[in-house]
Length: 169
Image (spheres, rainbow, N blue to C red):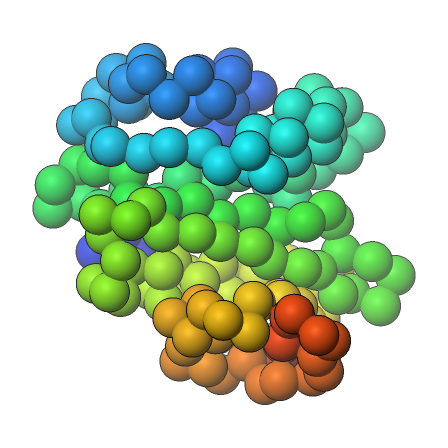
């Protein structure tokens, strides 16, 4: 678990991920959290079923880089968003991060703080040299999270900006 000033970041186990997918309050109940209104996008549901759950179940993989980390607002004891690494660091020490804040909690700085917490955690991992991210060009709030955490734009395509921060050069 990672703690920041306002947040706890908790890596979910395989069983907790199965409850997460239900989006019926059962995960929150199992973690003794207040219920949060959240929905799971079809893309996240597909990623959970096809990639995240199988990778978390694989004993050959480091589950901290495979699972979804839930972001808990300590003051309200509620889940406010999620983030994840997209696999273990590659041979160059690069790892990709993805994140999302539940709509009711947009604009409160939670994800900026959560990404900062993940960066601090990653700095302590000897095999992580840099963190990558991609954001939709039409989502300025998402790339503001990265800019506030000192990511620099490293490229783009028609739909996405690509970002990078070096943490253990």
